[in-house]
Image (cartoon, rainbow, N blue to C red):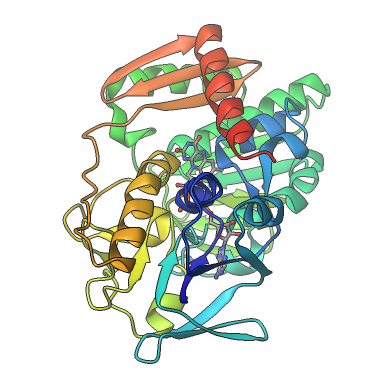
Length: 362
Ligand SMILES: Cc1cc2nc3c(=O)[nH]c(=O)nc-3n(C[C@H](O)[C@H](O)[C@H](O)COP(=O)(O)OP(=O)(O)OC[C@H]3O[C@@H](n4cnc5c(N)ncnc54)[C@H](O)[C@@H]3O)c2cc1C
């Protein structure tokens, strides 16, 4: 009997569980270890903040999904891997494996900003998300560091919620060192700037947060930005486990994998989603789209590795579609340099997101 451990209930592993319940694999023991019973779907975070979805509508019950797939479930965080002995530690559990797959996501952290860890409200790892939302909604002054899709989306959703609740005096600020939606061209920037202005979100462009003290951000330009609650959405940070376990990582600490999603020095360890970095595509954006698309390849490759069959490659598409919820059931469609804004866009996003969640509801 071979043992395959899935570490983390991320997007790619959801597909593995789905496939496993459709096509059981004989003589193989599957174990899912995840930090929380629920996997929270980040595509719907903004809608949840705005009050458009309930908690139940944005999360997937991993225990039930694993049960359906005849997979053991441990609610624990994987802390360390011993690749030489093919064992790992997760809470009180010391487990052996033949194959191990990581899909544990990333963290909203940045060790270069002093004081951030102490003062930020962390939205990732994903299971941390729901407990802080009410604090953000109730706060009179929320500052968000970041100018990408997630930062803009969260700022706009929070603004929409506050408008609906007539909290006119509350303040939301966006602090960003680079261009807004940097990956997407001038039209996207114009549209998102309009949305942020209309929502009265205070912007601090060209400001790089350097130091956080109680209720103040200090930037490289010596600007002081006050806040009551702080969110960092300026980029994904690697989980510590890979460095701690001596596995090969990229310069930012993400697990280095080849196009077959195998760790480059331990082929029996796989990695997908945010936590892994494809050596062939070092600049690949960290988003849920890639994590989802890697799922079927990962499934094929785990079975192929088990049966000593040829593995498949994951080659990402050049530009993936991103749809931002911009508040009040409107959305911004981004594909490469193309950008559209409107109600229809939000409805398309809503349909895609609800369909995704439905796939994994048991
Ligand atoms: C606010 C926000 C909004 C976003 N919106 C979008 C969007 O609309 N579209 C999009 O494509 N991307 C979006 N993203 C990016 C997206 O969230 C990530 O790229 C995506 O979640 C990555 O998926 P994943 O499968 O790698 O990991 P995750 O979805 O983060 O899942 C990882 C899982 O592993 C578990 N876990 C973590 N550590 C451990 C451990 N040590 N041991 C065991 N389990 C562990 C976690 O609890 C979680 O269940 C957003 C990000 C943020 C922060």
